[in-house]
Length: 476
Image 1 (cartoon, rainbow, N blue to C red):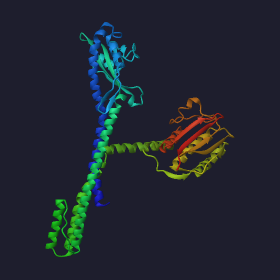
Image 2: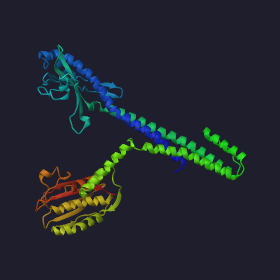
Image 3: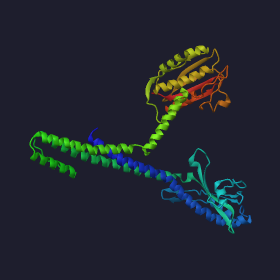
Image 4: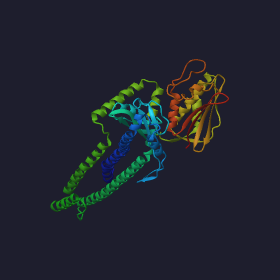
């Protein structure tokens, strides 16, 4: 690796990666900061509304009183507010009030009145005199469906007689958060790129200066007439003048060669320091003892995994892969013929015939070994669940940029109760003619292999009986 490239890499590792790390921290803090700001304003709103609702809640006229009518009127208002880069066109607060038992007495959306909310954190904590707030997802797996709930006590004569909660969907502020993250990311990337360009400029300047100094040293060593080079770096200019002075005072090529060797040695030290700094910054932040402890834990767990069955180990390796396999081109026909030939003895033992159906001349792209393993599992299942005298057919059809490898058997099919569980790990159905089951890992591995290749796997019962398994993968 040349000096200029080493200097550039060292500079970028020190400056660029530090900038990227700082950018990641800033972007990660945007969402919680904005949510904290919203929650702070909701605390003021909840306490203000709680004070306005106290008289009617005490008198038992809240549901049909002025407070309720005003809140409903608020919900029906039209708004069009351009707020910097965000345009607000809806009023999003949901307001509900409970009594001292946690029973909802009023709901601005009219869907919770009469319900017991005493177990929700916002109501329960407020009734106990604390700060009540919660964030609840309407869709458990979707963070964007979260709704903020901030509560305030409704107080009369120094006594808590109820709770007023203000709720606001996160989705309404997500555009603001997304824009802030995008702006910060763009400027951060621009800063890193600018740092890289600056590093490239400095590296080129330094490299040119060093090369001029190299030529000067070479000319001096060869006894040729050479002009002292000048550069923007004072240290290099001083070094060049020192070499010129040495040339004047010393006779003989040997002295000059030794000096150049010393210069080379001196240049190696800062270069080694840059390289060492880049290696340290590339390492994880964990201290060495902690990193060693975690490595030993991983090793011990790996040894324990080796005692498990081979299929569980293979599935664990597939699931641990964080990138697609290295794609390679292979022939589908040869793959299918090999899979069928390997399973022919088993098929004959089970009195099942294997047949290759329509197979066009096509190549596929992926890890041939993994795909052969996946297709072989589908064929194995088809043989296991086929009655004596049945036929298992393997065929291929093309759809745009994908190839569909199909395996059809004529067994009993998949029971209705197993349809949704068939790809779960360790879930297996008994084979015909006995209670023997498989490991329950084969189809899970097939699905994992399909996912790694950007494909899919599907199993469906056929009207005429049997199962039709389809492995869809990209063509070459």
